[in-house]
Length: 472
Image: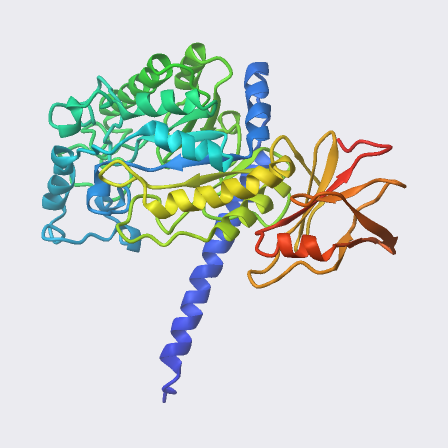
């Protein structure tokens, strides 16, 4: 058969589209399944803590470890799977075992002397962040806290930073962020590619899973389960108040119920995120790097990178502050929280641009934060460029303009009822606005001074007072 010279390109496009379609339906299929399976916690203290967490709306995620020295994707270059994010590079990349030795030797040079946790906590608080989650251990097994279960840790004598008074960076971070009145959470990876009880040195690893048959070698698997339980107990019992555990690695199947029950004996009310696991242990859902396209009636959180990578990259490309603010508004209007990730560098600090983004977000939150914190979504939640939230005092209609768009002299707010005589204020501008009801819309007049004052704003927030009713 004669082929057109366009056919290879067409096939490539069709293949790419097929992969995208498969990924889309897989991701949203999983989200839909998790949403249907969700179970509200029966423990009243967990329920209380979960309601407190939902009111916070905005948190900080941090992926950090010795891999930051090479600007590597966190852990995944150790995984012998044929995916782009598992790709190795460098002089040892052709030999898996040599590469693994080289990767694990990064412990011997990890010395983040510019680590100042109070600086991060202050910046996060000023940006409007109200909780944080830190990678105490990722899949590579390196522990960023003082575990007694392994010497592959930041406080080991093999790690240069171990001589620093703040060598237990998890403790230092939790203390600094609690001082700024943020909730604190521990990310913990269930898989551990350093542990001989997960990747048994007798066999080569084949993929991300244990490299032996756990049914055939139950004693070895039980050793790994005990190792995991002991590490989690260390964090739950020895690091002060802990508000949540964020467990990753859903492909590792072990009985987490007794482990979590033990953690909650140390930390009553502890929120637990056992991602895609037993619904009883999934206190909120965690879509990754995306915002669902609809309102979700159960607790959820989008975890997303500020830049392109979860971990540090020497040359990072951060999302504009405008986009980050609009993502936050979109998430909150759909009943979620946003956990925004910044990857610290090998020196123990963030890129300067990360601080810049937080300052810009903080400036917007200083004016408009009442439309975010302690709010609940308001139907219709999202409509065109509008997002809707409410609290006990007011409703908020939030307009998300395009980058070049400027606020108009007349703006129509859709789909909201208005009490006779209720006032509308544009946050950041003094005085009320003139409005009228036309058909199913509220038409607001925006003075020229207000248009000029908010010309560059990432989102415009119209505060609509409750006069004769409350939205609950």
